[in-house]
Amino acid sequence: MHRTRITVVLAMMTMLTVAAAKAEPAALQWESIGAAGVDATGLLWSDWHSQFLFVSTPDGYLVRHEPTAVWTDHQEPGVAGREVTALTMVPRLSHRLLTGRLGADGRGSIEMSFPLKNDGDYEVVYAGLAGPIVAMVNCSIFNPTLYACARALGQTPGVVIASADSGMTWHEIEGHGHHDVTGIWVSIDIYVSGDAGVMYTPDGGTTWQPRNDGLPAGTVEHLWTLAPAVPMPAKGERDLVGHLYAAMADGVYHTATDVIQWQRVLDDPSPRQILVEPNNPYQPAHNVYVVTHDGRLLTAVRGEWVWTDLTGSLDGLDIVAVKSNYPKITVATATAGVYRSVTPTDVPDAGVALRLSVAPNPFNPRTTMSFTLPAPGHIQMAIHDSRGREIRRLIDGPFAAGPHTAIWTGSDDGGRSLPSGVYLCRLVTPWGVQARKVSLVR
Image (cartoon, rainbow, N blue to C red):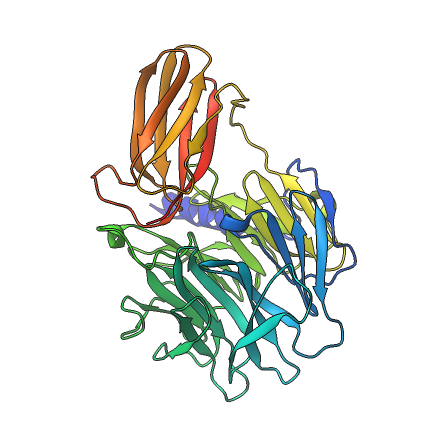
């Protein structure tokens, strides 16, 4: 019994330790993609606008048009109130941008603007009484609901606010129990972090409950969840398990949402960012990326928690933010610009032989998946939701060589209609794997 106890303790110590001596860097090749000399504070890469990369700064933001690699500067140095503290796209108004701004008085506001037009083309849609806007959650491109939160400013408490009309008007959600609010994430239900830990509401803010089992006392500095918000779940959706990640003064904590029991999975004081890989079709357990307090980039597979240092040649450049669009990883450094790499993978290259395509896309009520097999073989085709879960198996069996098609009508394996959203069609063959995003518009 004594020996077993020692083994368990040693295993826990191994799991929690990310030593000051860094892990051997993975073989990533980082390439500069611009913005050198810019004081970067964050990144945004929208799933439905992956052609744009936004870099927030104290003076505004820059945007990179990915197909042309052209940067546009939307900074206004020396102008009070231009510091961007949060940024998101506007539902149903995909050409508009919402930015959380920090004024010279320490108070936050929300602006709506055109991201690619001239500076000054913006409208203040919310002027809060609290501190900086630190998080904005976009439910989906098809749903006008938005959530945001602002930190406390002295004795003025932080606020949680919501918009039901794509950000044009906002109202406060009360009762969350925090004085200082540090983050909000929506995944069917609403979770809000702050100096009361993590608070949860299943009914839009009518009632609140703490979700702090396993968390130490103190402020949760940031809160992340696995997937985009799902404010209108399909039948039975509420039984599905999500995952939450919290940054605290002593490291990163993780819990599943079915039974809240937080577990510390990384010993790094006050990490800057946690990112969960949302769209890797080949990894059954999601990759987790962490930007550490001292500007390094670490990664681990959820549940295994063996951390690898990906910083490599960026060591000492002070990474401030990370975004992933599988298989590409993009990081912003404090002043040395934005860099990109490709994650190593053992997934076989399907090449151009399979030629998987989806049309129409977006679709309603049905779409066709087309592909070509170079030889006879057993294949699988399935639809996955934004959390990577298989929700509809379309094909599973032997097929002859040549062109083939499959039809999807927007329902799951039980025949239930799924809500609007971005899904993933994944084709698995003996010659490799291909995947395509497909948008369902109800």
